[in-house]
Length: 550
View 1 (spheres, one colour):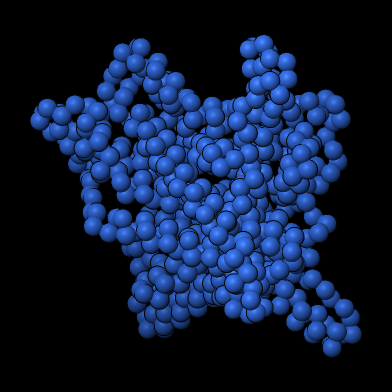
View 2 (cartoon, rainbow, N blue to C red; view 1 turned 120 degrees about the vertical axis):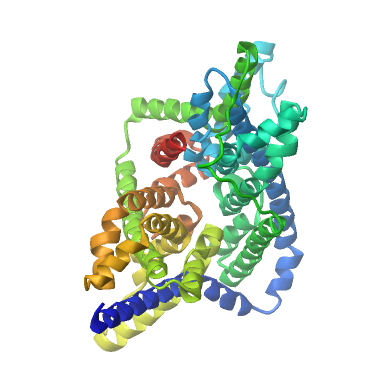
């Protein structure tokens, strides 16, 4: 290859690496700003938080995480083994239907069940009529607004985070191991405990950690159900008390819990090494069961689907239809849909662009530097939305003050809230939060392209950017489409960051739902909630198609 071509290629690679470094800095900046703001808190603030807010919030958060972790581990692992190890009528339906709760954000499940299980709601009213009681004073179920209710609701929505990787692990386990265990006289139930479950522990651990991070990110469900978690405390400290240093300090405590969760998950798997050759080993073959047992298994698999998706979806559809028949669709809802689509679309384009830069830098200049830049760029997904929002708020607030001073001194004009008022701060928060999805999906797509294509392009004198434009982009359309879909849907569903950073005159579907549910006017928000659920089904369809190919 000519020397000038090699030199041009190296310089272009250095440029992409520098852009990747800038992307990593943009993601890390909110965390740095958060730490600096917390360090500048007023005297005695931290001791006040330790004496009042943090103990209750910390204990409630730990109890919630423990309960949700147990529920998702049991439900997700059991469902994965059920549809993998046994062959019964309806199994293929359960395989993809068990993914449906992913379409329902946690705050919507709480919103729906608060009305469904209300003392004068449809469930308790029907039970009283059936048992012969006249009023809620005579008979009522335990209040759903409790720690137990929050654990159960979040558990039955978040279990797919365990179900997906655990089922994939069960499917790729060599059937020769199962056959060997059966030859040694091990029963089928014992095979699960002694062979399949130990091998699936890494997948279960990863799924639980993801579910717990989503639990930490939740703000709507916990607040609706009366649970004062650290996330809720951050929101109330900033919005209600206008105490930014206090909110920053609580956010740091929450970030510390996230770091501990990730470290604990990796420590639990430190000595575990599993390998399986999917090409050489025979695929796991499910065991055919009788019609009676098959019916029982189908009902067991159907239970989390009913609780986590079907019942809330039916409720939302019914309430939305009642609202439309009574008063039609509010013109305000159209504005909220437009706002939601515009913000999510712009954030998706920006996030995909930065994700392409970070992923291509690894492709172009593999090494420690690009790897570390990639890791820092994707760290935002582990941080809850409230933590990211507080950090972005500090940065954009300082930037707005600087822009206002420049505009006043240079042009003698007042410019206030340029970033916060235009929605740029919210898009920045979306970028930090979901860049991991974009960069990870695109990097996986790039890994499917043989390195020989890059070498051939360089031999023909093509630049690094030209290789990216003519080879990698066309061959990564599927990965780009999947990443765009996932980022768009997550932006639509994101509540904490949207609540904290949206402009005062902008409402989205998520914030409209939150406001109506907080006021107790559930019927007003049913259409918005149903729209979010319908949008959330899109990645579930993609996941189910991937599962069928697997």
